[in-house]
Length: 211
Image (cartoon, rainbow, N blue to C red; front, side, top):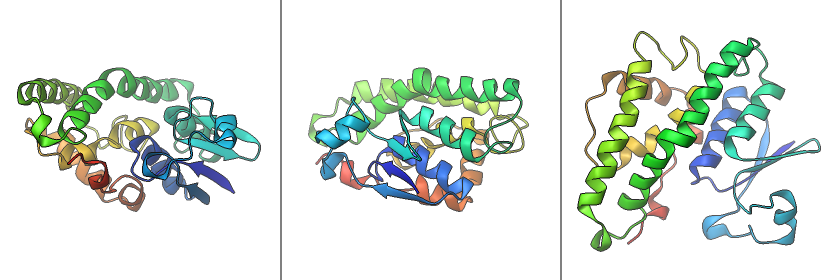
């Protein structure tokens, strides 16, 4: 059985859980990281020299970095589904997966760090406002991409949705101002209807909040 190392409150782990649940693949998730610790053990360092999460062990394969794990799981267990047989379609998914890491991600994590991970008395309101504005502009790109589409690449869920959609629960739960992005909001509502999304992504992040 596939083993997934990582805590449920890690968004990078959540991408993988959502993928596994969509496919219906049996797996065992092992809590490491955060309050669980365990990343600095010799055994875990052997699996992942970066001492980060997630890491997957599967039939002799060891894969880390969340996007790489999603690609691996999709390629091995969802060919013709999440793993499109058309290389061009896979490249479309790849570009949006990388876009999340390089473009959306930095602004998203800056907002999350400033609003959730920083104690209220230490928060820089002006800086937060700037980060939130920048993040809204990034989500505006997704809103435009969704015009005429149910999902980012068309009428079915893809790896692009898994990587970018994993951010939406936190985005809509954080106490911040958000621009009116109706297509993004409608996409989020469609994702929330999926049991795999609810199980994998809609996980309370209260334990991560600084007091």
